[in-house]
Length: 131
Image 1: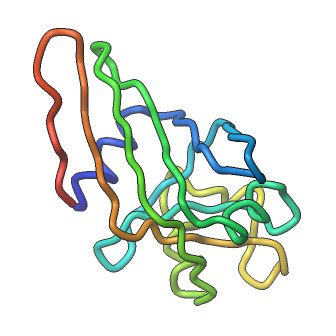
Image 2 (image 1 turned 60 degrees about the vertical axis):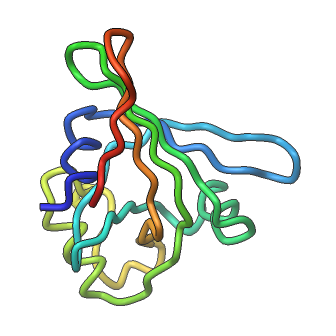
């Protein structure tokens, strides 16, 4: 499995940062999966986060794992309109299958392209996590 996805899943809830104009926007997320070896996130096309990722695809997420280590992942959010990608997201236990369905017209998935993942703790040097 993609190591970045593994680390994000350990955090459970993570926070996704986007930009709207010159204002950063941060909100909690919980759904992440691996599809074709890549990190995938999902959202709803009626939400502001979707509009922000379309307008400026640079994103960063952050989460805290048990034990106090924290994770920071940056990359470019690339919309993937394939039903295969959506199905993979829905099949994942963190997927939002209770909120979305294939063909519902609002369910959207994004691949995190060129992710840079750093795991930090107060007790040691930062660790770079490779996919």
